[in-house]
Amino acid sequence: MKITCEACQKGITIPDDKIPPGKTASLTCPHCKHKISVSAPPKADVDISQIDSLEEFFSFDDQASQDDYDSAEKPFDFVEEEGKTALLCEPDPALREKIREVLEVLEYHITVPENGREALKQMRYHAYDLMVLNEHFDTNNPDVNGILIYLERLNMSIRRNIFVALITQRFRTMDHMAAFQKSVNMIVNMSNIDDFDKILRRGLADSDLFYRVIKEMVAQR
Image 1 (cartoon, rainbow, N blue to C red):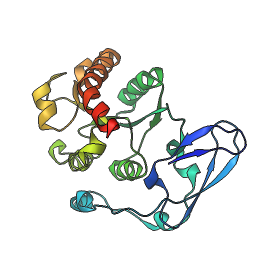
Image 2 (image 1 turned 90 degrees about the vertical axis):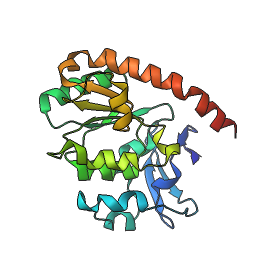
Image 3 (image 1 turned 45 degrees about the horizontal axis):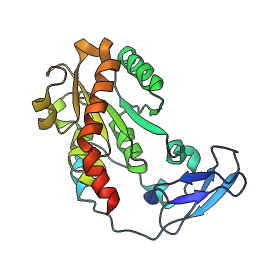
Image 4 (image 1 turned 90 degrees about the horizontal axis):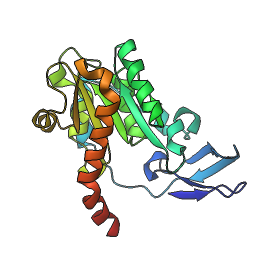
């Protein structure tokens, strides 16, 4: 959904699924800070099968979705159209800070969830451009990482627009077979974290080249 601020006439893009059906969103224009009210789009069918299996990992309080939408709680829903967003799921503070510095240089708006439950809640409200995920984030067993399971079950039309970098100690950096097996875009071994900037830039460039034709074909439909 695209709207225009009636005060400054700037355009703002809002994902259609960010406003509960029958509700009204209250948001602040990122340009002039004018308050804008937006009615919800028509209700669309939702396939919940992709999240049913995650109940053993996380539980959600859906009370918030019953109330009017408050944009202050979900600030990245209304970033400018060219703005890029990233979800950073790394439990180690020192490692997280190194990764954050790289993402800030690349001009990403960054969300840092405290645990897997909060990460999945953020993902339900916003489609991130980039995710950096430590396979041990909020789990002792990397093979049952709830966030990875959620990503594996996403519809491909959504998943192909999210670049996922997996931080691990088990696989070597840029191991394409391991990335395929884990359903992520790129593997980064912790031993190479000091080169995360160069590794990420290369991974993003390769992904953009790979998906460019597909995205152009989808856009023409």
